[in-house]
Structures are given as structure tokens and as C-alpha cells.
Image (cartoon, rainbow, N blue to C red; front, top):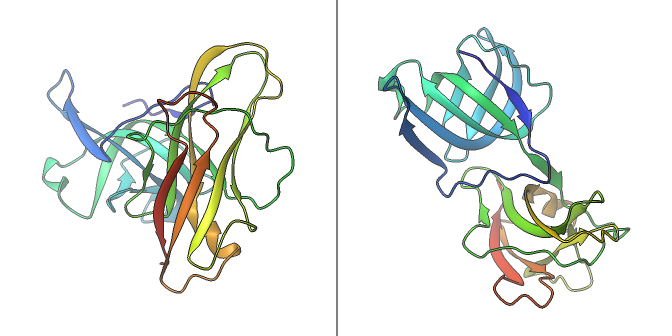
Length: 225
């Protein structure tokens, strides 16, 4: 089975509502899809493992893919043994692995921009087993390179609530083609800025411009591991 490691550019997004879902391919082998974190390793004959967002640990069966650093991924795969579907860990054959944009939260307000960006309420989600906020978004552009950031605002944050800003710099892009992307943020970075005893509420504000059909605020809870 051919295995492919891909990096998803900012102009393209793969968004799936379920964390671990499946479908049947042409040879009646069930194909599963999942978001997760990929970790390099050199033990038991494996060179990496993927821990999915619902806690399953996937080991590659004879994979030619090399994972050099911990990264956020979306993958499709089939189980070597179909009886392992409900087990905590299993060997799988990966069809392909997409490397996602995975970034830390920043407290440096330099060149972050305030360009409009569009996020749908029913698409943004926080991972179950990883401290990761996943933000599918839309924006207008197509000519210049854009940048998105999640900014920690110390002035508006309090001991009870961490205030974050989802920022977009369009670099004065004059092209107005509607494009989409997906970015994932490491919520454990919150502990770089505030003391978290058990958990803390965070709120993300979003500049949606004048477009009312998208959200301008989203809240979640970060729980300390």
C-alpha cells in the first residue's frame, strides 16, 4: 500500500466533523479517518506513532513514512486486524498522512494584522485527548501570502479568563477570491502566560468584519494535564 506524507497549505482545508469515522472502500476493507498527533519513535520496529484525538494509538505496519518531529496530522488508514478496531492501540496501514498547520500561541503583537477572517460556529472544535484548538477558517485573497496567529492579550485577560485573539494579516492582498484553511493551536501554551491550577476558561475573539453570518467570539476550557 502506497503511503504519502503531505503538508496541507493554507489555501486548502480538509474538515471532518467526526474525530474517528469510517467508510468502505472498493475492496470492502473499512477505511478510517482521524485527526491526531504524530510522534517520532524508534522502538518495537516502529519509527513513529499517531495518537488520535480520541486516544487511540496507531502504529504503522511497514510504513515508509518518516516523522522527524511531533506534528499535527490528519490520516486515513485501515486496520491490519479488523478485531483491533475497539482496542486502545493497534497496527494499521496508512493510506496517507496530511501534516496540518500546528502553531503555538503568541504574546508578541508584531505584524499580526487585523484583517477580517471568517469562522463558522459549528466547525471550530477543541480536541478531546490533546490540548489543541482547531480553527477552520475562510478569508479573501489569492495573490499575497497571508498569516494567521492566536494572540494572548495580557491586558484583557484576568485570573478567571484567558483572552485570545485570532488574528489575520492579509499583507494588503488586493485579490478577493474566497479561500479556506485550517490551523491548529497548542493550548498548553496558555501556561506560559498564566498559572493554571486545574483548568481555566479561554475566549477567542475574531474580527469577522461586517459579515454577520460568522462568529466573532468562541469560548472553551483548557484543562491542565
